Amino acid sequence: MARLSLLPIKLVFVLFLCLSPSWVVSADEPGEGIRILYFSSFPEIVQSADKAGLANLTTAIATEKALHRETYFIDGGASLGPSVLGALDSGAHMVDILNAVGPEFMAIGKKEFAYGYDELIVNALASAFPLVTSNLVDRKTEQHIDGTDPYFLLEGTKLKVGFIAITSQNAIYEYGANQADALDSDKVVRQLSAELRSQGADAVFLMADTDFDDLSQYRQQGLVDGIFYTHNFGNPYSLDHQGVLLHEGALDGKMLALDLWLNAQGKLESKATMIDIAAYEPNPTIATLIASYRDRLSERLSPPIAQVEATFDTLRAHVRTQENEFGNFAADALRSYLGADAVILNSGAIRGNRRYETGTTINRGDIQRELPFGNRTALLKLKGSVLIEALEHGLECASVANGCAPQVSNLRVEYDSQKAAGQRINHIHLGGTPLDPDAYYAVGVTDFMAAGNDGYSMLSNAERISSRRTNRAMWDLVAEHAENLGSIAPQKEGRLTDVSAEPR
Image (spheres, rainbow, N blue to C red):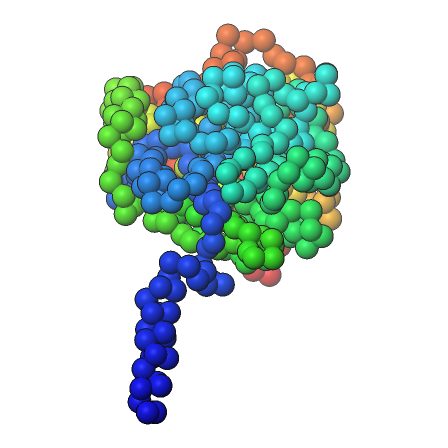
């Protein structure tokens, strides 16, 4: 009798195990909701042979959409520039490609302004998807920038998700978007969070530009449910979903997949996974489109122009903190071209982050990759005291590895990084002679710096020296200089010497 009474219980248990996957939802597994795919920080369409690109990403997106009923792809920005091809077409090719990929929207980061405020508007109007910035407005009208939206509400059948995109103010200060004003981001987040929830959003997410390291306060206060961070060198996070922090992202070749659903109590739950885009074959349509752009680039930029005779690098950590070999080479090229007394360049213009070995060759594409912004030449009549002020500002930037750190030509600056800001310089020589604070000098810079960007406001009112050689693309003249030389061996020469780092 005991055996007979136990049999039904065993059968019920077996049936439970067989049926449970179809009707029991684990606390660790997504319920019925939506899947959001997220990618950012990928402005270069041409990648090395061993690295996956946008064609692989497109296949990964299509695969995910086939596997999961409600799947939406969003772009976190830092995607329109700067890039090799972007310097030639101001990012239009990337809009063309992203129109084919089809994001729901793209957050506007500071790098979307890599080619200027007006070009951002042109790209926004040409896109088949919304470009979103919640805190930047037009300076004159105080209205949304033409072609952009202040937020995005994703209306799925299971969930509505609102997105607020906070763009770094450095779009103005570093990238020269002077026609824009930045609203108080704290007020913007609070206002739009309430507005989106009033429109029925079940969840609200914050899209954070590259300069924002930690915005968890808004999640902790319940204003947002999570934060997508634009993936960037030095940023600690890529995603904060309800307090779970992830670090990997686009720069690691990973697309983020975030599942969102409401549990039985109506509370939002989430689960994130990483998708390696290299695991997917390139999408043929996107691959063909990229190849057409690559071929046009190759025609102009691929032929070798100079031999490398001494190893050098353009690593970000080196360029933004000290004198750099390529920085010297670029500054010398500009001084030679303009016939200037001296040159000062902002290190943030140098973006290659590469190492060049002795015996290799470089081409115009290499130079364009190093100087991708399309900045143009300018010649200023500067008083010595203003040049000192500019150098002091640059040395302050170098102390925190900021892109406004200086690279110079025909200047030797001895300074003490341990001194207070604005008081670091001990001596400056120009062409072997002590700099005279009261004398005037012809100083070469880029048009970006001449407009007072990157904190060089002291240059904005300087008299511009008229010359037929001004207003030429910086990368183009540097490439020409290398080609004329036939070989390059850039060196450090003690142009920027920190006495506090020397042995005592």
